[in-house]
Amino acid sequence: MEYAVNIELDAIPRNLNLTIYEVPEDEFKSFPVHRPTGDWRNMPYSNAARKFGSKLLFDTSCLGLKLPSAIIPEEHNYLINPLSSKVNLIEIINAIDFSFDVRIKR
Image 1 (cartoon, one colour):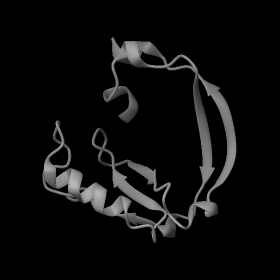
Image 2 (cartoon, one colour):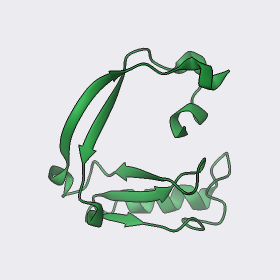
Image 3 (cartoon, one colour):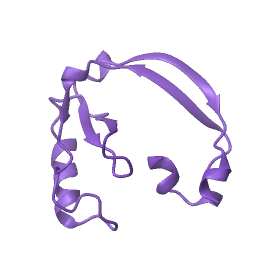
């Protein structure tokens, strides 16, 4: 859902891939729904939200962030920090071709 909300229908690539990872959840920083900033769900993103995310990106001691979904706050997104010194803890379990169902954007 996050992907569908943030992309125009014409920009969706036809050759998507669904990748399943195994990650050590305790290596992710997590935040309750009222964080990271009071306006984090608003578009366009505020300077405070961008600064919050940028600060965490440069914290290479954590593998990533577990953040509430802006679309479904009861669910979470896991953002992997590619600069983390712990990125080698991630294991790819499976990767399969994925076709985005364009009906979701109509």
